[in-house]
Image (tube, rainbow, N blue to C red):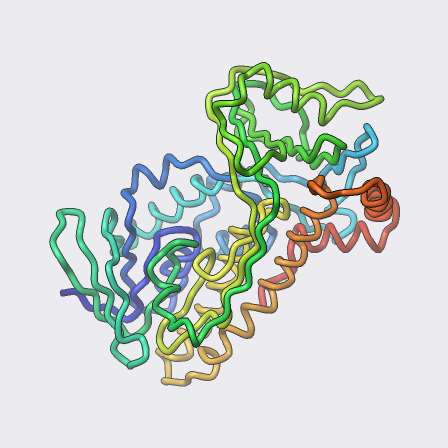
Length: 393
Ligand code: PHB
C-alpha cells in the first residue's frame, strides 16, 4: 500500500509534466504506468511543440536537449495546385514559432528529470480499478510489474492514461457526455532512411488525397498519405508507396521527394473526440484520456500541456489552503482550449483531405479556401496563430 497526495495514471506528456510542476510546489505525486520505460522511449511519435509548450519545458528545466536538437519551424508550406504556398509563422504572429521535437524525445527528457528528483514512477504497472473518486479518499488498485496486487491511496487522481485507459470509464456514464467524429480516411505513415526533402513541413492537398512531408532527423524522414482506414500496410510495396507520395506532391515546379529505404509502415485512424466534463469528484482527466484530435493540426501533445497547466494551478490552490474554486473550474477552463483545437484540427483536416463523397463543387471550394488562407493576411494570421498556439490560460 502506497500513499501520496496526487496519484497520476499514465507517464505520457500530461502525467510527467504535471508531476514536475507539482514538485515545484512541494506537492507529492506518484505516477503509475502500464508500459515499461524502454517501450515508451522507443515508440517513435510525432511532436510539434507550440511556443507555450517549449516555454513550459524551459521553465521546468527540461529544455536543454530540446534547444539543441529540436528544429525550429518559422513557417509551414501548404501545397496545392502544384505549388508551395508558405505561411510565415514568425512574421504573422510577432515572433512565435513551432518546434519539431518528437514526443518520445520529450518523454525521455521528462522521465530522466523526474527520476533525478527522486520522483516515483511505477513502470510496468497496470491499473485495474480507480475507486472512491466521489469521496475525499480515492484509491487506485493495480498489479505491479511482478504481478502482485497493490493500492495507491491519494487525495486526487489524475487520469492521464490515454484514449483507452481505465480512468475515463471511472466517470459514471450518466455523468459525462462523449463527442465523437470518425473520419472516412486514415493516414498511411512511413519512416524512411533518406535526406530531408523540405526544410519546412509540407501539408499537401491533391485530387488523389492529402499528403504530409515531415522529418525526424537529418537521416530519417516521416511522411504520410491519406488512405482507406481499413486498408492494410501489406497491400503497399515500397515502389507503390513512393509512386503515390510522388504523385501527391507533383507539380509544375518539378518538386520531387528524396526517396530511401522504408523501414516502418503504419496506418493511423483519424478521429475527433471530447469527453465532457473532464472531472468527476476527485478524478481529473488530462490529455488523450479526455480528448483526441486528428493529427493534421499537430495539437495533441500541446493540449496535454495546456490541461496540466490548469491542473497545476488548481491543485496548488487546493493543497495550499483547501480552496476548491479552481478545481471546480478546471473542466470549463481546459475545455475552452480543447474545443478551439478541435475546431482547428477538424478545419485543417477538412480543408486538405479528399472526402469519399466529394463533388467537383467541393474540390473548387476547397481550393478557394486554400487561396484565401494563403493569400490574405487575416486568414493566414489566424492559421499561424492557432498553429503556434496562444499562451496557456
Ligand atoms: C509528424 O512529424 O509526424 C507530424 C507532423 C505534423 C503533423 C502531424 C504529424 O501535423
